Length: 326
Ligand code: WDT
Image 1 (cartoon, protein in one colour):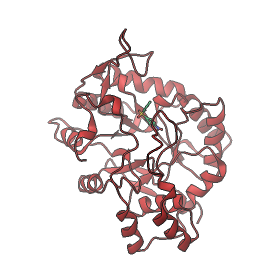
Image 2: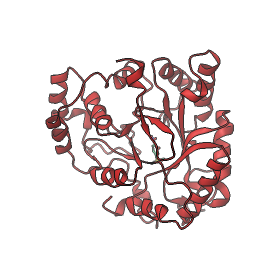
Image 3: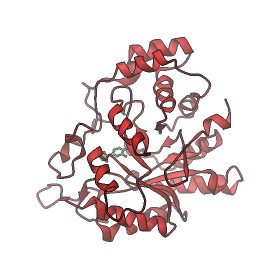
C-alpha cells in the first residue's frame, strides 16, 4: 500500500493525468463552517491528491484555503494537488463561462484549476445571484444554450492558462458526440463525469468513452446520501447489497471498498465524498487487493440501471441528458 498506489493516475487525452481516487467535497446537505477546511486538510495529510468540487457546493473558499495551507506547511506543492471545479448551469452562455471560472478562482484564491467541467449540459437563465433562478410564479427559468458554443469558451480558458484540462459532466453520448464533431474543435473533453456505481454500471458509456479516449469519472460511487431532496426511501441501497458483502468477506473488505475497487480496476476514476476521517481512510484502502475476473463479473451482474440523481425537475429541458439510453 502507500503513496505510490493511492496516488495512481490515469492519462488524459491532452497529455496530463488524473489521480484515480479523489475526494468529493459537496456538503450542501448540512454545511458547517470550517468543516470543509478540516476535511480537505486531513485528506491531503492521509495521501489524497485529488479533490472534486464545484461552484454549486458553496465551499470553494474553504477548499482553496485548505489546499493553500497544505502548500504553505510544505506537505504538498501546488502541482501535486489535482483540483476539479465545475461551471454551473446559470453560466453556460458563452458570455458568462469565463466569469464563472474567474469567480471560482477568486473563491479558491488559486490561479488555476487542474480540471474544469461543464456541470450539466442544461442551461438555466443567466444569474449571478441564484443557482436556480425562478420567475414570479416560482417556475424555474430554463435556457437552451448551444453546448458547442459553451465548449469553445472552455477551450479559450485552457489557452488562457486558467485551467489545465477541460471536460464535461452528465452529458449523454449524443451530447459528447456533438462536441467531438465540432468543425473547429481544438480540445476534446478529457472526461465525462457521470453517476456510476454497481446499480448503474454505465457499461455502454464506459465503452463509448474508452473508444474516444475520454476518461470516465464516477460520482456517487457508493450510491447517494439520504437527503430527502434527492433520495426516495424506496431507493435501493448499494452498500447493503448482499453480493458486495459476500465478495467483501472473502477479501476482508467492506462493501464500500468492493464498490470502489470495482471502478478503479476497470479504469474508472472514483470520487467518494466523506468528511469522516475513518471513512476517508477506508475509501483509500483499495489498492492492496484485486478482484478476480469472476468477482468483477459478479459485480457487473448486480447492475439494475438505477439512477439516484435524475434531476426530475428538468425532464422538459431541451438538453435533459437522461431521455437517451446512455
Ligand atoms: C439540488 C441542487 C438538486 C449534488 C443541485 C440537485 C447534486 C450536483 C452534487 C452535484 C442538484 C447536484 N454533489 O456533488 O453532491 O444535481 O446539480 O454535483 S445537482
